[in-house]
Length: 195
Image (tube, rainbow, N blue to C red):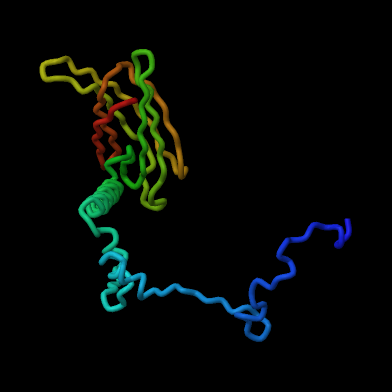
């Protein structure tokens, strides 16, 4: 189909508008009717306050965190929990690590068929003054007053190695054990709950 065969508009011969109107230097000039001032006059007061330069207050990071009551409560709860975690880790109450005569001891116990399997891991904290030699261990179940007290005795030997592991079984099953470790000069008393 050629140009002559294509259908034409019925008013193709008429000029509908001035083709050069609105053009500056060959480019079309666009008119925008947007006015921020006119729009802000109709806007609510909260929107006008956002655009008002004199009322802009620069709030800091902390002001955003405690801007209202729920945010403040969450922020202070996080701070309190972080402080508690730090205090517990510094006081070493959450772990089963103990110190005896320059050695760091980690004690673990597992209940198994009416017995408790004890595991003691020793690491030398101070290599020059750490104790090496016999360590007497006495293990007893926590009993109520008037009950018969049964005590299990065991002896291990700390050598000059930096890390050592010791394992032994205690012939009774109890929810809580009283453990006494004694070297030639020092004594360590522990209340331990096996898993």
